[in-house]
Length: 105
Image 1: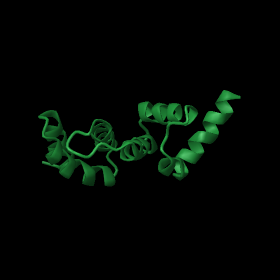
Image 2: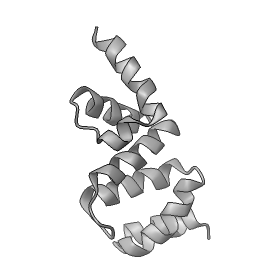
Image 3: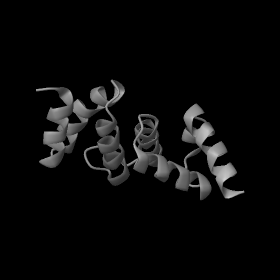
Image 4: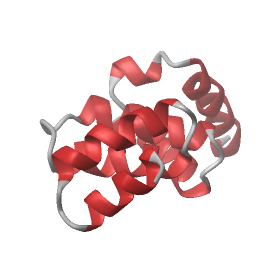
């Protein structure tokens, strides 16, 4: 069983600390689904210390991997100026902010 599937299984069972152990390597390896699940965990503080920065980081990674809902959330956070500064400095987010600025003008 792959790290991703182990992580998903643990997440669905509410075993968030175990899920984190498996999802982080999968996310680092480029799994969009793992990035999304990690962002949810950091947003809610499930199995990890709640962190808006880490939530936004993993959400941004999911957006980079092509998730349209993650892209939309990042754009909304940019428009409302609620995206953490550390994530705003990300190159991908810089590209998105240019797109958001062009769309609002």
